[in-house]
Length: 397
Image (tube, rainbow, N blue to C red; front, side):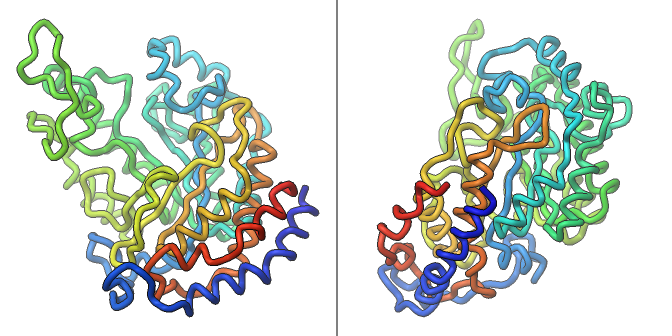
């Protein structure tokens, strides 16, 4: 498979190089006014000029969802979607002992694909931490593995010369205070204390962190954005209307978390999912591709197959899909963060997912321009190549 991938890269490098050259030189198209928009080099809304320069040049990254949910192999929302009791789900930690774990292999796949940074789920919504959190029993250090996987991952990514990113979810399904932050105030505050404590650990114990990828840390995410006002006898839950915000008494104290974050890691880049000033905006899923935007840094994250976490039997989409997606993202002046869900108890990723990541991303990244395209106001320029070019090589992956 590696030989096929290298041959594919060589065969397509010239074509893609011409494509990117055409993109950078193409005349302005249909998006009115976009051609005159200046290229902004400063960070997003955080106000620190230049902090994001490396990230905006990187273009491609690998997202890794891996944790207890990988063992059943039914996706990272398994506990919630199947309503597995907290104590029952926690017993998965007794099985979590991937003796063959070697994050250097993950880094090798990412680097071979031309990706420039990685983002690993240090803790998802289920609350299980892949790092040392002291006396907290629900961590990989206190699981059957007795291992700090974040430490190993950071070391491998840094050795490979890749940007080090960590995903972190402040919310935790184990806490009733997430669902009822006012009724169960003590629980909500305990969840917040865990959030601030773990955030400090991640930013203090692993050297320089390049990206901190938040998820579910906004006040509006509490109770899944539910509104209980006017309900009687527990009936009447409704999702808060668009634009209506949580007005209860609980606070994540995001201002304190942000001050600590900037003190410990002044240059770390964060997305906009924790009620903090964002360095880049997250677009999630293929359908969120959106428009060209060179004013606000942005990133599209999407999966290579199925859910974000490992799902047994899921196959990648056709190679043609990834080629088009990558070119459309870069043509709109964004980054692509492509997710893989490694198998639960070993180092490997789905073989076809790995091969397609190398093929679809690698050949394009070898021809990547060193500067961001300033004169591509529409995705149409990125679709100027003949579709048959990609179809010819789909069977190789």
